[in-house]
Length: 225
Image 1 (cartoon, rainbow, N blue to C red):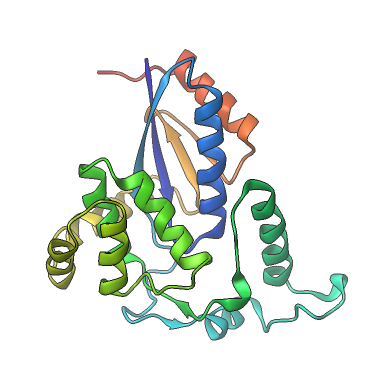
Image 2 (image 1 turned 90 degrees about the horizontal axis):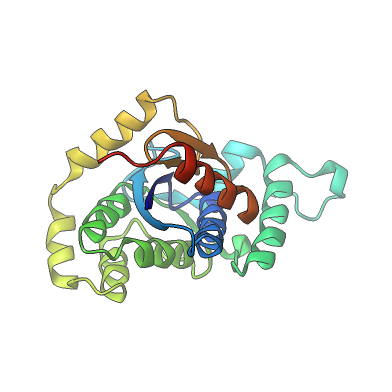
């Protein structure tokens, strides 16, 4: 028996990295009960970000207000509180979030194209983690074709071929259509996990909750041929 998991997410979404890490824990917890397969689905939190990206701190300030990390707890804005919570959750799950050193908010369309190609080579899971780590821990520009080609190479892909593909429009329309289809389903928040194309869970749920979600999919909503 196999449980198919469509994970809808964006690489610049910190909750998505946390969600993937917890999903990995849920898969490990249920490995003796059934097999699992993950398909990563494209979703851009902000498709209007320019192709070259924008300054990270300016972008976040425009969305949530200025950095007030030095303020008293009750006076901190929503993003500062969320960032501090994410750093705590990340530490608990072995994720090295480092928001203070981030410099660019990239456009992620090409990163999703890269993931699509990796999916066809069974390298998407490793690449997804590579992309998260590159962005949140190493502060690399994952909107840059050279950086993406390097990350693809680190996942076992052909760097020169990736550069050629990224310079063109290969699968550009397909990725945009996939995202449009996801939005038409009413999904507007990530991460979202869809199991066996029938039931969904949203948010970075606990390992226990995600494991139970997978068990429910396996027992009540088996994958159809």
